[in-house]
Image (cartoon, one colour):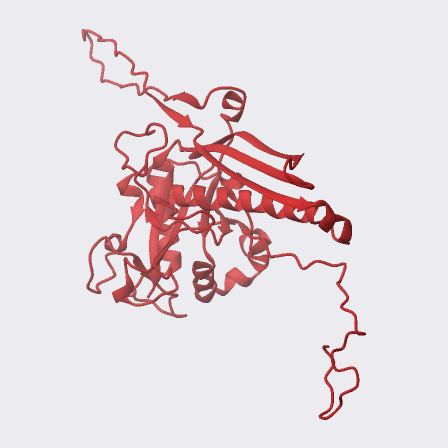
Length: 357
């Protein structure tokens, strides 16, 4: 019985005449924003959707230009027909059972509720896996942020000089890439990040500011001739907080075309990037919010920037079906998502691992 009784009151002590009432409203769990489809392209989806598990992608041949002088014998170049492959090799599923008696007695449609939740979980897993892959990391468990260095090539590399994570070493920002940081630690450690104080003129010596970091990511894309139109960057809530601490313009609806940092989802056109905020980026150890030099390279997060053409996703199966359980009076609902993802242009992806200074 929920209602309290005075001391010594013994009438109807068990409260059996006070019935429990179940609300017809169900408390839904919060859902994270899925951004994978916004930052990848599906150009090859149609070619792989109906048959086979691999599509070969031919690279544009490089053509040499030579100086011509009168009387020069012209030698024709043999063109290379290099290719790489996108493989559909990732599959996830769900399956749950709704008992006939429970369904008949319930005033809540658990089939619809559970199916909706399952669809979100499949999309969320796709987001975590793809964002980890783009950042050079992989998951040690499903439904968790990537936390282990990726060393598995999907299909074949788009660029033979890329590492086993299919990314270019020159496009992975680390502490040693910021000459202003003079604190002692290994060169490949995570970048300590903090907001610059208002009015500061000298460069900080113990950290990089978030604007410095994102500007550097943009510069690397510029040096690789990556188109300005179609660029994106994915940051986590920790980086978003530091960005907002550094520059009050991030809170101003007139900045960045007046878009949506205020609703926490996306901001259009800041420094040439569409800015996405996600909880599905890689997190190693206790994550980027762990501050201090001693925690660099053990507790950090990763952010990633790129171009819409840099990575492709393709799916073959994305279906849900319901059937009767042959061994009980119940309906079974199950679903599967079979997909592949491929870094097409590693020169158009730049990553940075960081922790708070």
